[in-house]
Amino acid sequence: MDTTKSREASDLFSEYCDNTTIHGVKYLVEQKRPIIERVFWILVFTASIYSCITLTINIWIKWKNNPVIVSFDDKSTPVWQIPFPAVTICSETKALQTKFNFTEVAIKYRTHQKLSNEERFVLDSLLQVCYADYFEKLKYPSMFGNASEYVKLLFELGPSFDSTFMHCFWRNNEKTCSESFKYFLTEEGICYTFNSPDQSNIYRNESLLNELVFDRNYKEEIQWSLENGYIESDFKSTLFPYRAMGAGAKAGLNLYLLDVKLNNDMLCRNGQQGFKVILHTPGEIPRASKQFFQVPLGQRVLMSIKPKIITTSDNLKHYDPLR
Ligand SMILES: *[C@@H]1O[C@H](CO)[C@@H](O)[C@H](O)[C@H]1NC(C)=O
Ligand SMILES: *[C@@H]1O[C@H](CO)[C@@H](O)[C@H](O)[C@H]1NC(C)=O
Ligand SMILES: *[C@@H]1O[C@H](CO)[C@@H](O)[C@H](O)[C@H]1NC(C)=O
Image 1 (tube, protein in one colour):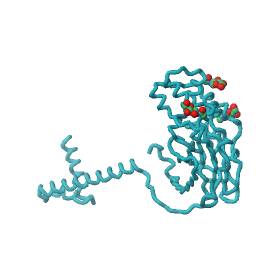
Image 2 (cartoon, protein in one colour):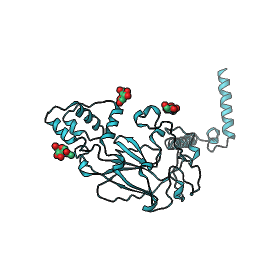
Image 3 (cartoon, protein in one colour):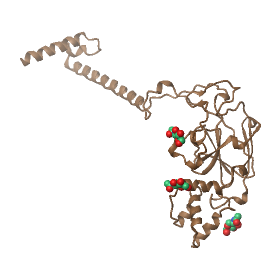
Image 4 (cartoon, protein in one colour):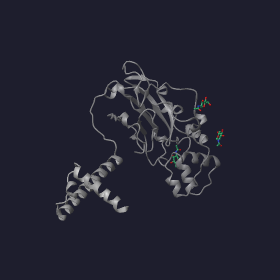
């Protein structure tokens, strides 16, 4: 039984080898071939299969790790098809020294004088936005108190909006600063943002501090999205977020900011004075402690922006985000 089956199988194999078009296989079974030649063909055949598989695996791994090809396709886009960046300004003065003398309280704490409850409370809230290494060295116990109260206090102690923003010019026309800027709470305390949706249009209800949301039902009409751009490409209409219509300093945003040097507490901010300016995409959250420009006091600073647009092909939509 077994022998007939194996015979049949070997017959079938030789028939296949005789007739196949794969090169070399034919010589394996030809009766006249010397054994050495057969061995040679077996080696050649195995070697070619092996290299085929290795090459395929290499390509498979390459595709698996890196399924996307980035190519450069230079195309000019009119500046009015993209929004002007959102501009967030944070003052380095976190508490006016005339309202709360951080340095004085720090000295008091270092010299082991007793701090009043109110001083302790203000200190706790200021340490959220001041560089706290001085107090860390003195092993000041860190506190996690009521966020709403901390923020309310920062509003009270910090420089007011009206005393900071003197003049605002947008595309060479004077604008009311308070209409153009909205407050934005960042890890650096209270900042003000131009050309970005309001906080309550970015965060969820439960992440907002009740005291600071003036009108929860207020929804800004945002006429631009990162995926689809502006709803209208006409450059004449005024859409939000605003767009620049040309290049140069006068086509953008011009600000006159005021900070009183005497108010600035050197210890709180490790000697930094002036303002932090963060440029970001409208709708993005400004990362005030990570990416910023420092604008010093008494100087004029000009920032020019070169936008870079990277678009992703629609075909990539079905890929897993991890890949
Ligand atoms: C704050 O305290 C420091 C140290 O005692 C003092 O030099 C400074 O003048 C005080 N600032 C104000 C505005 O009183
Ligand atoms: C925080 O303080 C506010 C009043 O300032 C109060 O309404 C709120 O309940 C407090 N939150 C917590 C978690 O204690
Ligand atoms: C947020 O709160 C307001 C007022 O409490 C409510 O009208 C609105 O529906 C809430 N939004 C969400 C998304 O829950």
